[in-house]
Image (tube, rainbow, N blue to C red; front, side):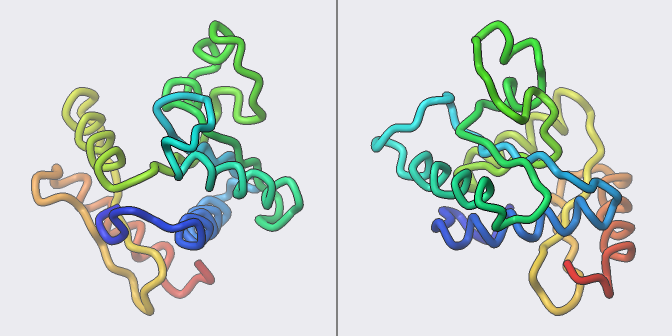
Length: 161
């Protein structure tokens, strides 16, 4: 979350690949990946939404294996079926996202901080791609979140993530 401020298309693809590996490591055989945006509409004003179209096409062609990838979707539609139903959004994610891919560091960090503050959520942070596990909790995360980060690093080290 804190390494790539504005991911390119290729970096987004790699991020999704790492996230899918983590999901599969924890037993999610067909992960659902939501490509997050402020709306469900593609617009040239938001270049990442154009990347999303390319990513969905790659997923539909089987480039990510057994995974469901859709977007752009807003967070509520990605995580709550009723929201999509009310809006008339038809998506294979259908409110059941396992992974949220944010367009940039600002939106991802704001979401992470809001969830931890307002929902008192304990989460895990881990960099994917380095040779060895690198935990990345926020300095202000709870002790439990920091513990979860270390546990996830231990559980995923030595795997093919």
